[in-house]
Image (cartoon, rainbow, N blue to C red; front, side, top):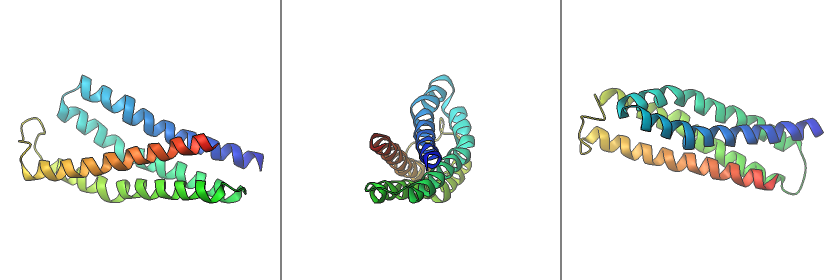
Amino acid sequence: MQAVNVIYRLAISLWLGGAALFTFVLTPILFRSESRDVAARIVGLFFPGYFRWGLACGVVALICRVIISGKSNFATAAIIVAMLLLCSFQAFYIEPKAAELKRRIVSFETTSKDDPLRREFAKLHGVSAVCNLSVIAGGVVLVILL
């Protein structure tokens, strides 16, 4: 049982750490050091792997949480399920739609912000950002509950 507890803690830590590193360190560095179009292309290349990472960590954590018994089991499992649902929504709905919009937008640097495609992309980006920050917040709560 001790090994399952360690794996659970590791999965949560890797999920939260990966999300925080990508969101608060790597992405801002890319957008500061590269043009908007280049940075967006690079970040877009990372998104499928980023979401697979979150889903893998979440599934491992959930399996471990189900194995581990305790009074906080339901609350932590519910948080993990919510985080997995948000990550799945991003991976299987938002990211493909956003990637398609990015392909249709010639350049974010030269296309007007009033362009319908840019406005649609901005909405998706906003929803994705809320989902991502919610996953990070859930991870912080889970770490506190450790």
